[in-house]
Image (cartoon, rainbow, N blue to C red; front, side, top):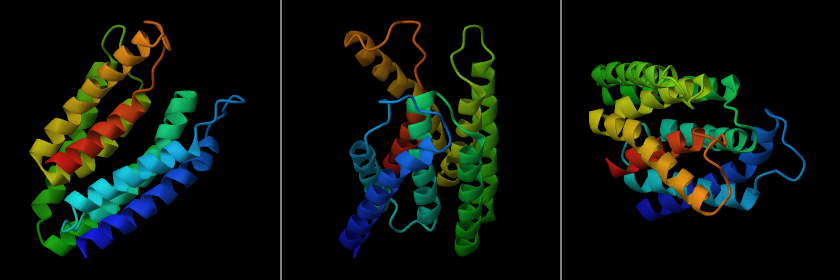
Length: 209
């Protein structure tokens, strides 16, 4: 049953990644020739959904996590192509995740977890808002709002997941920038999207804790 669930989730994720490209492009203006490859996002979706199903199969929050991952794929498209995290998509992450976690809380009978989820969102917002206000900060308030939306499911999963989800995006972004600099793809002053690092860090925190 577990293998069947993971396979089904991976196929669903591949479909979500394939659809995420046109959905994300509908929210931003993409220069001609800069459209992301749908195959790459289909693969990312399969890995994201399959990983969550493999590690969170017994978790009542799995549907909420998959919904957040699906919208996150579209957000990755908008940030990679246009350096934007549109409010409607970020709002879908927050609303869909919140409703899904409310249902999961009702299933488990542990209202404390929903309170911790709300605290996780608040702490994520506060932490990233302070970082965005620092001199020469490269974080935008789209990143701050997405961090808060992702703090909700991470908080529901527990403090270790939240701590890891707050730390890992900076590690992932740093590694990505170093690789791009070494490859000559960017300069030190080139704007680099941070949304994919936020999403990737949250996913890793969910599957590793």
